[in-house]
Amino acid sequence: MTQIEKLHNELTDLKNTINNIGCVSDADRCGEENDKNITVNGEVALAKIKAITEVFHHREESLQSLLAFYQKVYDDLMQVPSRSEKIAAMLVGQLENSKVPDTTKDYIMEILQSSLQDFQKNME
Image (cartoon, rainbow, N blue to C red; front, side):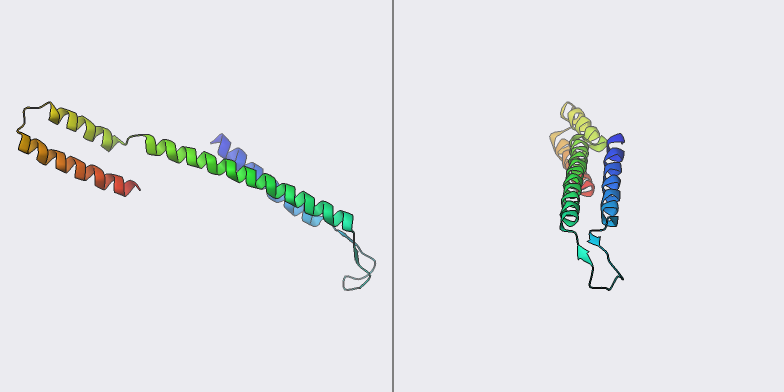
């Protein structure tokens, strides 16, 4: 949970940085806003572009880390046998070692397999 919070904080910091960069003017103003005497300072504009590019690069890295973390959590959850699967495996083991007639065993096995398949479909 700490890792998720850390990544979310990084993303918030990057968003705030973008907002702060946007507040920096890249124009030398000499007059009213609609005046034609406004000139853009090329060095400032290029520095803003470079800073924004860097922020987006770091944001992408943070998002990739978050995605990798979520993928690992998902993979871990999918590898853990469910309680139903454990119970079904235990019942199959008990059934195979029992003295129940083969036709009854086959019938019970079909029910267990069908129930387990239905359960797995519902989990997807």
